[in-house]
Length: 79
Image (cartoon, rainbow, N blue to C red; front, side, top):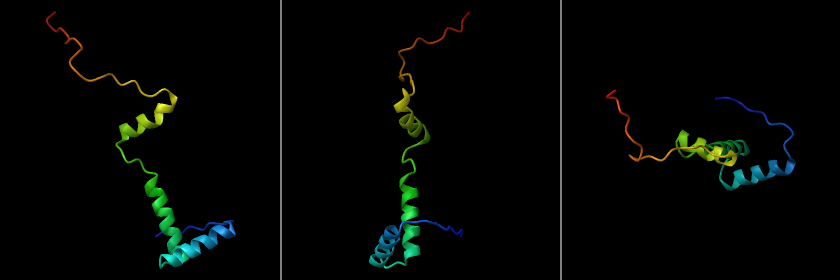
């Protein structure tokens, strides 16, 4: 397991983590681990990569994806 040291954390935040840990039956360190783990898990895309890329590109014009279907003529390879 890796270790992480967080410096200059606000005293009020530290106290809130301690209280929240006590309410959940965990130490302050275990509660901080739980908070970090759930924050990282919730930030992961819940869709496939293509859907995720489309969603993040929608703010800059989006991706042009042609509609699917048989409305385009088939190529002629007889010549």
